[in-house]
Image 1 (cartoon, rainbow, N blue to C red):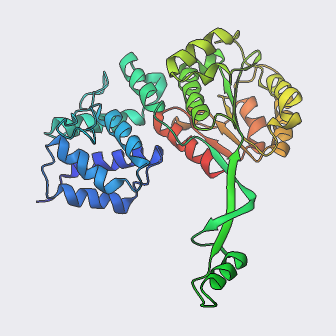
Image 2: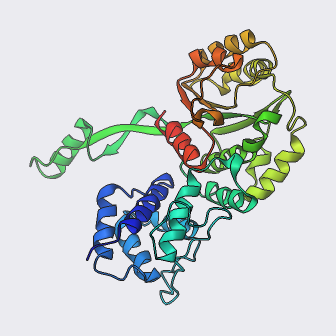
Image 3: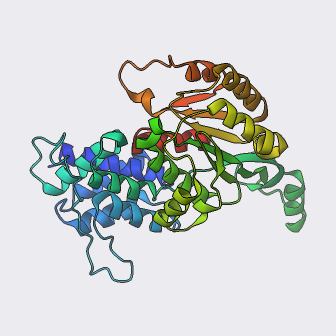
Length: 366
């Protein structure tokens, strides 16, 4: 009979959520899950849960991530390995104002709600209701791959790569001269520093909260190699405040620490202060630096351009996330954006959960 098309789209969105969380739910594994469900009851939450768990996960470390993503995506309760009698509830918690959006013709409530969750991923956070915003906050907290790696000079054993003559010869000697398969080695990787500069001025107030929660997720992923600052009329280092394990506690601490929340914007001056006090001394050297701002510069745009050029010479990669980039017909015509863009490696949006997932991918690929 085949799996309904609406459910295939829902499962595709679920696989995308898993990949954002670090689970290798590639198209081949997704196809295996769809094939399994073709022989099971897609209306049975337990069948859907176990079909995905047995096909989409490749390693024991993927199982906790799968459970968290399943619960978040379908807003249900994931089944326990030890207590398999307790089934997950495959009903997404529909966000207020989005019931049925983009799901015409679907008679299955679970498919309808899950499709609404997929729509929510792509909606501008500035246009969300309070309930929808809370759902997005919960999903942002699940991100666990917001980090960057760099190649080390040291080598480690690997299945493929360049030949490791030392290990190969030692293996031959242990076998009394019998030639065995060659051994290989590859460069190790080490964490690369990620620095996030988040604009908390009045024009960025609809996005500042979710961007800071994204920074909290990044700090949780790589606590020793992530630094977070807010910019507005002052530069404020909020790395210590964001170290709270719970996102809401971290946000409360950040709110108390920021003296210029919803104020003006002097990006050039604040970027110069960052480079003078932190960046030039080493924090920006070889780092991935993310500037999250709409580019509304009330100060000297020429100063901003000069400091961006200075930052570009220090950093490994400069990423600018502008929530307005996703709007139809957007062009970077403001003086601040026009001055900054020539020195930016990646210009992305940061207006939705899907855009933040894309930003995490850009950081990871840098």
